[in-house]
Length: 94
Image (cartoon, rainbow, N blue to C red; front, top):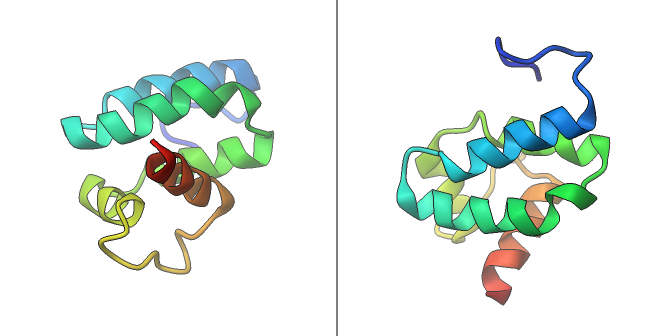
């Protein structure tokens, strides 16, 4: 999924920088503290497909994303992906 500021031709490195910024500037400090450290640790290792998944997750409402990561709500089928599972595991292991 491409947002208005993104182009399909962006390199993965440009996408990674954009995603890192968006992870640290979600709108709620709680979600920043969940997403930002994950991005700092794993973003460089994500495949192009996983970057796609991460960008999709970043379009989701903050409250939904927070509740899925903290396992306060079940993850809906359309949001369930490998990267979300990695974020949850990262959060649990910290």
